[in-house]
Image (cartoon, rainbow, N blue to C red; front, side):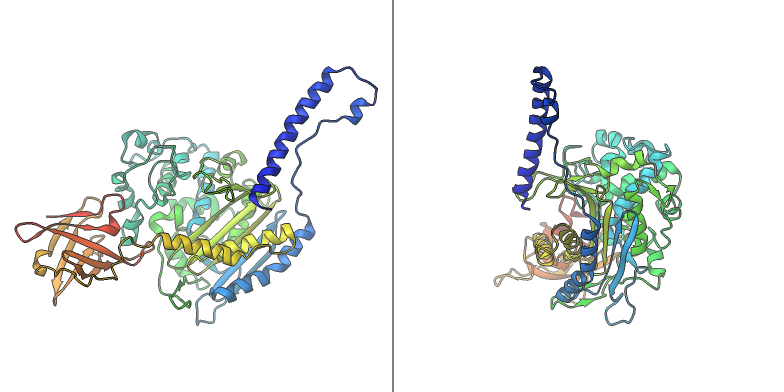
Length: 538
C-alpha cells in the first residue's frame, strides 16, 4: 500500500474514533426509543491491523532460500546468514555462500560475523540491565557516572544523559571521532578529544554519532565498575547463552568459523582485502556474533527482557529502548513517513500501522547487517552479510515481510535498496576531484618548503618529509602513525589517498607558504569537516 493510502487509512481510523466518541455521547444523552436501540447503535472502534497467520509466515519462510540465492547471484555477495523468530521459536536459520572468497569454508548459523552498528541495540540492552538493577538511570547525567566525560559546551557536559547520548540528541555531529578511529587512535584518546568537536543545539537536533553513543555506554560501564567488554559478557552474553558474541575484536579473529569481510571492487567482484577493528567504538560498532547468537538476542527483545523463562533484563528497563525517543528529521517526501529513534533502535510503522523496531549495520570495508522485529506479531528477522553494504541485508528482510503481507514480492527490493545505497555512497564523494590535475597547474616550490613538524590539538602531530624527490606525511598514534604519499596537484596543494572506514578517494593537503619560504600551516581538507583540520608548523 502506498504511504499516501496508509496515511489515509490512519486518518480514517482517527475519524472513526472521534465519531464513535461523539455518537456514544449523543446516545447516552438521548431518550431510548426502544429497548433494542442500544444493541443496534454501538460505538465504532478503531480498526486493528490484521495479524499475520501461520500460513503467511510459512509462505514467506519457504520463499527465503530463493530470495537469498537470487540476491546473491545478482550481486555476487560472498556470504549471508538469515534467521526468523516467530512466537518465541526459531523457525528458520540458514547460511548461504562462503566465509571467504576462493576458500572452502561455508557460512552456517554458527559463523561469526562483524555486526557493525547492530552493536548499538545490543549495547542499549546491556545498559537496560544496569537500569533495571538501579546502577544507572536512563536520564542520569553521563558525567555523574564517568567524571572524564566532556563535550565542548559546559552545560551539555554537565547535563547530557545516557538517554541523550544513546538517542543521538547530544548535539555531537555525525562522524565526530570517526576519523581519529580510522587513523588508529584508541577509545580513551578519542573520548578525551571529542570535546573539541562543535555541537549543534542540545536535545533539539539529531546526529548519528558513534562516539557519542560509545560515551553513553562507557559511562554506564564506569558506573558498574567494569570495562565495557567485561560488562557485556557478564550481564548479557553469558546469561543469554550468546556463546560466540563479544565486543573484543581479538575474539572475532580467534574464531575459525568466522566470516571474513569483503570489499566490492570496481569490476563488481569481491575481495577480502581488509580487517575492521572497531574496538575503539565497541558499544556503537564493535560487537561480533553468530546468527544463532542474534536469534537468541531477538527472542530476548520479543520477550521484553526474558529468555527461556529467565529474566535477563527487567521489562520496564528495556521498554524505553523500544519506543520513540528522538525524531531524526522531517519526512523527505510524502512517500517517506517520519521515523523515530529509541535507544539503539529505529522505530517506525508499516503501511498497516504496525510497529517495526530494527537497526542496520554497515562497514564500508566489508560488512552489512540487519535486524528487525514486530512486537505485535511476535516476529523478527536477522540478516548478516560479509560484504560491503549494498542493501542486500535490508532487501532480504523487506522481501520476507513483503511476501508475508502480500503473498509475493511486490517490489524489486534488491534493486530498490541497492539504489538507495548507491545514492548515499555518491553523496560522500569528495567536493574536489583531485584525480583531475589542471593542465595549467602551477609548479610546487622546493620540497624543503613543506617539510617539518606541524601541530594539531585534535589529531596530534603531523610530520612532512621528503625522500627521493617525493613528499610524504605521517600522522596518528605515537609509535604507529599512518603514512601518506603526497602527490603534487597544483601550486602548494598536494593530494593523498584517504584511509579507513570513511575513506572516499583522494583528498587535499593545502600548504600556506610564508615570506620566509616555509609553509606555516597545512590544511587537510578531508580532516577539516568541522574545522579541526589545520596543522600549524611547530
